[in-house]
Length: 104
Image 1: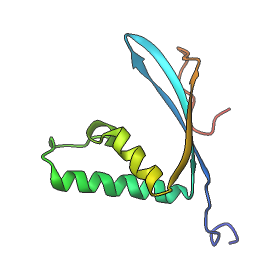
Image 2: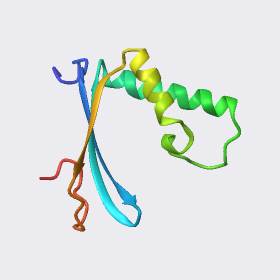
Image 3: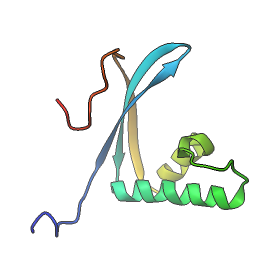
């Protein structure tokens, strides 16, 4: 019950990003220092909703990164003091099966 009634205060969000660039596998980690993680997610959702209302978009499901200008989103998050700092580092891109969330 103590956990269920506790308001979560997340101050850092870690993204483990994988993909391809120029035919090579890449992997990066981005750590975001935030005021509250829920505000980060909520603001990006609001920016996406506003974009959809103001622009014609293809039918179907898209990732926010496919339709939003990342620099504009980051500028808004910093200006509104939601995103306090972030750092991106390169990680080794391995050919092994992807690690499941929470798996060691």
